[in-house]
Image (cartoon, rainbow, N blue to C red):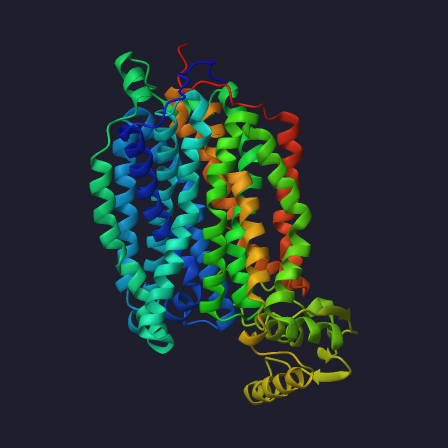
Length: 552
């Protein structure tokens, strides 16, 4: 841990200090904007690049394509973290933003599956991988750069502005999507309009590069460079020495893993839940989430500033705990306020899948090849795709699965039978009519959405995010010595957020499909957040009074 050192400032920020925060934060906003477009537009990407597989598999495949960018973020942290500790903070995160912007622009004009076949999803995944690598190097550089400029008593407040960038990037992406959708109409947006936000990234790239070129190198890095104390082998020093490696592990399991799942549950899974499960139209869902983000974003700076007074650890741990305890009631409230008809139908006419468990597959299909042809798979696939709650009841071997909606039974069929296509059409028609008769809505009724209460619920979820995320940049910077800081803090942050957080939508979607309960996917973030709370409380030390420069 770095020794206690650093200037204390009670004076207002100078113009140069404001420029450091503004330039670093704005460039990072643009990076997050680029990165999150693929998640916000997953439905259109699925239709365009993964149209060669069935819709359920295509959507899961798209989620995994989105997650691919998260998967490689730790590798980006290693590559660019090493460069940042050896060459400097400024030029390293200048490179990352160029890679991010160009990758996003390519996705915007990439032909679909219908035009170039399998090359479409392959190139899309490749661009997502490049985006992930770039983001892996971006965040650690921006957070380190700002923290190394900040007075010791304002480090939480200053770095909290970097913490707003992920939310603001998502917010900007939702606004751009909404503006384009409104301007061109739903039909045109679905055909090609969804590409415009990707193409617009080239403008943001030009602005970002110009801004980053105006910055000077971090004073801490200049000092250790002048003193000849830069690390010659930051990877070996950070991860090959137990005294540093144990801090990396504590940062991962005692901080960033829980922070990540709270972040992605509150800001991304909510959007998936609204549109895919509750069947709220995309425009309404985007507006609700955007308003909640707008209301909640100032709390990043509030909790970052508060951490300068009472410490980083108490705020982060409290956020993990209360989020885990509140997810089930809050998501049930979200369903109540946005699709009360679905809630009423679920209570009045519960759905039961009666099937032989041995014929039921796990509805997680990462390569998009499974056809789910057993009668059980057909039943569960139809219900999970419709976002419906159902219970599972075992049936004797050799019997076809049945779907019981209230007191009405719908027979399924064997997907391998010669007349499977005809039986499938009849099944879809019968199931649709039965669900409609039982009161299950095909979409959420806009007239029944309680907008104020839905936004209140979403805002609470965003505030949980600000509690765990606002102070964490300062804490990660303070945990590691300056000579290996970029490398050391970037890896646990991006494993936590890239893996634990990034795979949350696909994992939760698969859990829901397997269990039949639309809320069961919440167990994933709840378990991880609670594990982080326990590990953090027991083993992670407070860092508020640590220095950003280690004189040893």
